Length: 308
Image (tube, rainbow, N blue to C red; front, side, top):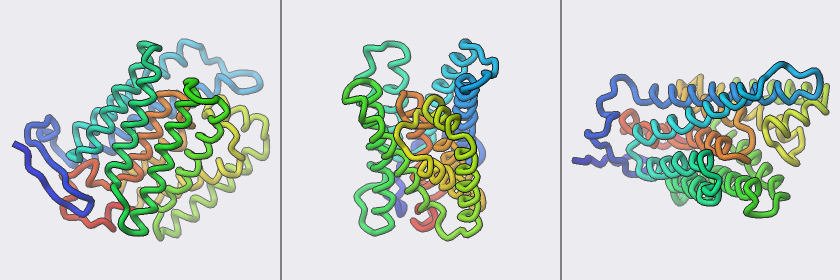
């Protein structure tokens, strides 16, 4: 039997028959733990890719270790998405993330699944993000909808260009859309001045690092993060915004949101299916209300408490 619960973000349903009903502890901790596992896997794969492609005496990184790290990253992301599917009672999130997880992993086993994979991941992202945010009925809701739409459009264009469905030149457009959406997540900082200050410091530090050796920075952004045609200033601003969002989230005790911000930093652009899943997961953790991912903990919380 399914019991439906209504909150400020819309109806959710909890099914006592789901495996998660037997879990002990706080569901928000489960979501945060899943996000942290994904963050570590993506960060590890990105670090190895960066070290392998440094444009000077390379750090010894064997191709086999990179392959293992890439496979582990995809596996952890898939398991994390499935874990969120099992933990949430929001139908749009459940179906959207399940579509993304299934279709995002298929091309790793069969190249013929590239087109269905791109369509499935994009459709899943649309349902999970836009379907859950819903039609905006206020300025605050419109801001969140616009940022979610930016992520969906960025994933769609980047995957389509990378897989040859559209002109490869549109990869730059996809990168710009994703970076713009990341900048838009700054709405989650709200009025936290300390977090804003941290973001500014990270922005300045990132600009200093990229300016000190622009060739190395450009190579790392292209090869390790698949960033194409985006000015270093915008990239640094995106990193600063993620640092601010993560800091503000930790100060509010919203650790899942903090892991999502970290994912958006290390995932890079969604030019491959694993990266697209990482960007989608990061966007979901940052943008969606806690009640959408872990409804059992937020039934009594208001929109202003759980959403930007």
